[in-house]
View 1 (cartoon, rainbow, N blue to C red):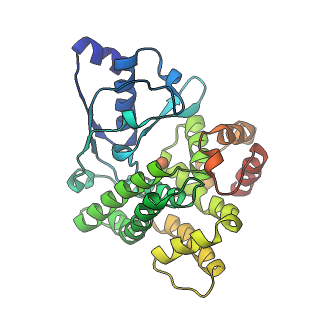
View 2 (view 1 turned 30 degrees about the vertical axis):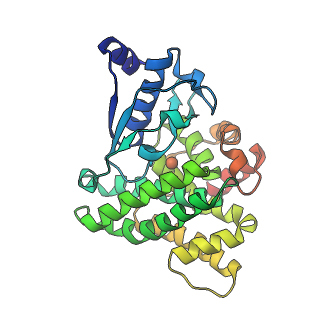
Length: 303
Ligand SMILES: [Fe+2]
């Protein structure tokens, strides 16, 4: 809100967003408010942006968000402890300048958390109900790059081949889920992130393997293709699908991310987290239909 007032006072005719997902999403919000007025919460959903927003150049400094190429902005309503999404092609950056040098100073934990966010974008983009061929193609290539380069980027931040591979993997994953959607992992991650102000990538990472296990019976063939992109060969789709889930759990440990318990989720918050997950705009995109009770059961299992 303050950024939008400043942009209006200054008479800004364009925006430059430099940073990770939050600064880029914030700049998208500033672009909307500077041209439309009102309060940011009024723009939740897919249909509230009515005209062009300020043209924006996005320069990502993390490899995860994909926000530099997506049509969405995720904002936390701090009063309600609720993360909501604003989606419209008009809020996308006009130009994305993706330079791996700008990601080289990320410490290992941030590299790991943002990198896992990118992996979730690719896997959810590939398996969400609205998946389509462009989303599929970008997702598969993104998965190949992320599983290859993420451990290297975490181990050695100055490995520029790994940094470049991760940034491109993140961009492709962002394109994938923009053409498709994210799903239950993001529904949980956004509910957790709204409640505890925990990093988005971390919230995704703790939920990914459990949600994949839950979804598995509804996307055996697709998970098998994910496993193939991870480099596995197998006899049956069922076997491949299980390998994909196992690899994700292993990768989360390998890059040093803590488990679900590290978030300090309180029992009394479970109902609200489950409810906010179910009301997320991407819940209907999950390959396995999910209600609040399913989220509650899954959260208890993860605990
Ligand atoms: Fe994400």
